[in-house]
Length: 253
Image: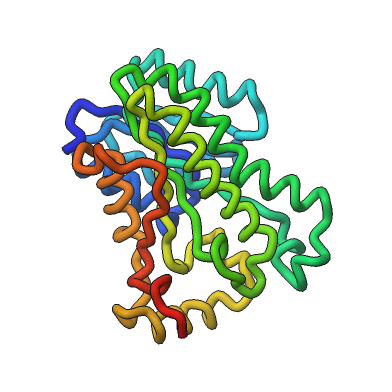
């Protein structure tokens, strides 16, 4: 499906991350991938995971640093030339902002969450677009806490709502270049990031009890939808929030 296509993945943390599940699906479909890591401390994890992939490009990229974003895409262009798809799986809020009440969110925590979790999508799309000379696909990861109140999700829910709105505006801006922008709303998964949200085990049980499929979604199921959105079978889809949550979002009670 993706033979001869080149992509870049932002947000691989470890083998349990949604970004890694997406990378596996994309690679198995023939995609050639590049990966970023935020800092040297995380480089070893990404190197270890990608060691058996065919010549992956690894580059440091803190999305809050314009020079690292520019260097990442310059190195990608030098190695691959054309960019066909990008997966944005980045989100962060200070731990204290995921405790207590949203009412008490500090300005610093709010700006940090919005910058890394939402504005970075626009930053990366702006850098990616000139390399998507034959069109392309940009996929990000959101969560139901953008639509409904989820205990302890707090400022991250606001950031994910901004991410979903950014998806629509970017889809409108980039459609004329045949670049599609979509986001996946995954159900709760026990990733490193999710464990920063209080009462994750309770959330997982509640979700499994009430979702129509009576279970939690698996990271690879999300990765498979990322593959679909990055490939030609989704050529008519843009600006969408696609739920991959075993149907949980359709339930009122």
